[in-house]
Length: 227
Image: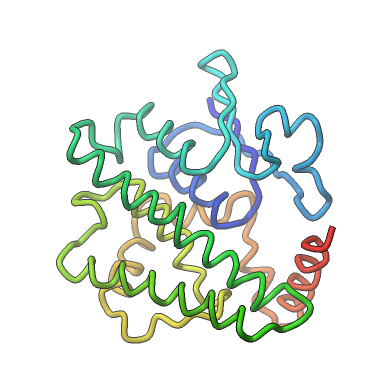
């Protein structure tokens, strides 16, 4: 049994979607980052960086792992799925997973900060991060023109990138004209476990359908940035 400590964010969804895709038994523990629970000693024991998600594998002497990419690799290796064992296949998955970890996630995160959360609208910063997101999306689109999946076969690389790219509207970045990316996104949406994974620990998107609720959420997030 896996204990998952998470919140409804793309990084959290990367792990919950992986768990669902691998059909692994897990128990969810909501970490209320708005209330600062990620900084409590009990959570820091599992995630020293004070960021979600984190897991504890009860079967392996309560092994605690933090960082979403590391968790995905661990789960895929544990299940023997979604990560090839041969050197070439593994390297291919790893490079696209790291593309998300080092590029897509951080750039979309910064786009969110300046487009949605930061109280002062600094247009050069908004443009810088939205343009970089679009560039990264174009890299994905170009690669997907000749590939069904990012790394040959369906893998954790697809899950990691999809959990972020699917939220492009929140970052204020359009995918219009990126037909290959849009095709892949629709295919990913229908993969087993994805729809269940993105509502863990609860369906945040359903709560933010109203524009007023989106504004309140952004204001709360903005206040956290200044602490």
